[in-house]
Amino acid sequence: MPEPPRIDPFAENLREQDAGAAFVLESKGQWWHAGFHLTTAIVGPTILTLPYAFRGLGWGLGFFCLTAMAIVTFYSYYLMSKVLEHCEKAGRRHIRFRELAADVLGSGWMFYVVISIQTAINTGIGIAAILLGGQCLEIMYSSIYPNGSLKLYEFIAMVTLVMIVLAQFPTFHSLRHINLGSLLLSLGYTFLVVGACIYAGTSKHAPQRDYSLESKMSSRVFSAFTSISIIAAIFGNGILPEIQATLAPPATGKMVKGLLMCYTVIFVTFYSGAASGYWVFGSNSNSNILKSLMPDEGPSLAPTWVIGLAVIFVLLQLFAIGLVYSQVAYEIMEKKSADVKQGMFSRRNLIPRLILRTLYVIFCGFFAAMLPFFGDINAVVGAIGFIPLDFILPMLLYNMTYKPPKSSPAYWINISIIVVFTGTGIMGAFSSIRQLVLDANKFKLFSSHAVG
Image (cartoon, rainbow, N blue to C red; front, side, top):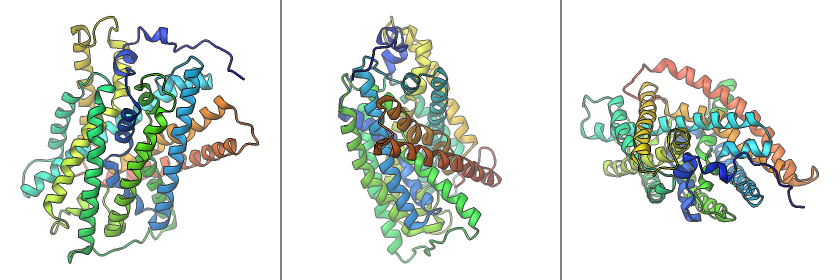
């Protein structure tokens, strides 16, 4: 039975005056462009954190959680794309997550809940991307000048300057070629890191393998939930509606093809990166496996040129990731600051864009330098951001939109996922914040080294 028409507070005619929609989220892309954007949003240098996540879970539970997250997130993103397509067919095409949630759930406060979570996620990832970029430069510098005087925060400043320049790409769609390069880079550094780990694990300098978990049960439980939160963050993608918005309408079926492209890359990279890194370093895995391969003391465990090339690939991809996750912040800014009646590159719109985007990147860079907690930031972002948006809301939106009967398997699968991941999110938030507090004792503001 067709859905009865209703007033859409986010109708196309209202968007005609919305520069954030007209400029940043312009809809021109094909399904493969969405695949590039999705892959950049999910498959990033957080792969290098997977061995660190495994050290809180062990082999069996680690692979179980990795596989479960892959299945649940693919299912979740598929459901969200179906809800978006349903709304589009009913004459209500949504290009923002917050608009979708507010419309389907019929609640104005959900608009503000989603935009708050998205802002936290995007800012957290912006900070983490700049921090990891600074680490990459530090690794290259220390390999050339072991006793060099430059500090981590100085490398973070360099990355921030480059990000300020790249932030001026005006639209999400304009990043499509950059994100194709990002996809290729993720495959490149994954293969290099896997090769480096195999080399390290079979060399005479191979570290002693220890796969033991925390001896105290309470610590083991907290570590497990922190690891689950990290994996959730690694699979997280809190901007799927915005990515689908870049598709030229009608979007029917296009997002599923993009998801299949993305998860093919996920399968190749995530499993190989997790297995090889944890195999070599076990419970001593660093939150950045490259740091484990190049320890502060002792010789490098893999050829320097291999690690160096991997670091360069990671650094280049980080710029793409920072750009992708900043798009929501930019469209919010331009919704208020830009004038859609004037050209995208008119002085009236160019100057505010330059100022606001520069200030946003400087803000992220400042906090990256001040609080160098890459692994722990990842866990907190996963628990309080990605789990609600990617594991809870899509199931709720699907049930509200399609109204499957309570006797159907789809209804109970969705409800079960909501219940399980609500509990996981609460425990993950508590354990990851606890770990952040514990690590706070190991660092000082603007530290020379990242903690984790």
